[in-house]
Length: 333
Image: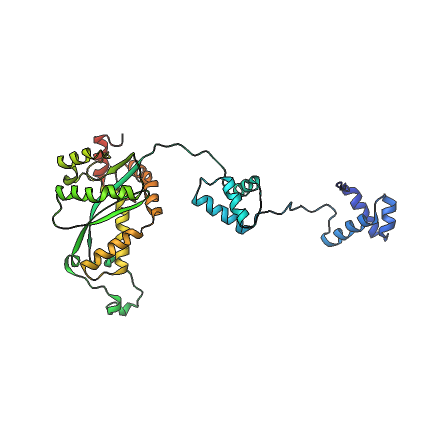
């Protein structure tokens, strides 16, 4: 059916004026050459809205419901490489049939557009370092809700022990794909024991995380790590080691994971060293891969912060001598 023409504002106003003069719909229509139904529609609109012009139209209703829009937005945020066809298929399974154009319009309204992914050098890094975990190491950071007079109530206090009640030494590693193995170090840590730990845990972790080839191993400049025997072992295994300046543990992203681990351990309150080791292993394996990926993704912010602040303290708690070491060694420039 052909689209009917719209009356101009002058004719609409004239219809209202004639109606105010007491004329009926049929008489007004005959005088102006319009249908009585059209005259009636204009007069009823004037009585209701006190205007004669057409109201703004909302357009065709959106085919994608708010729930459907939330679903595709969530998928795009979690998987930026999702294609239009994938989203069309997801909505189809949910009972909504839409075109790729409708998908694109919905995403654009939420501030997203399809762009070519930037190409960056592929660098996969496996970070490792040792850490000492005390049995009651983080209890001092816990808080309680209490009244002022109840500060020494046993429920509101934390028992402490000299030297933290004992400790264990751990070696761990991680990459952007998740955490690798966590190994308890027994006895005195030396170069031979360190190489044994790498032999039993490093390559196994790389294989479990499916890092493939082209990855780089990163550890600090601890004498055990830089010993000639250790370098020869790494060379024999054809492992590429990332150059790392001295006194740099503050910027090693694995330090964030150690902090995460210590907080989780404090919440579970292990009672002895054996229990402490068990809790460490369990909580380490629970750290989400997304946390690891985010640490690697945002690592450049640490570097920029240090450079911008010329080595002075930043929110990442970096010491001034760290940046000086990098400057003279040519690590940054």
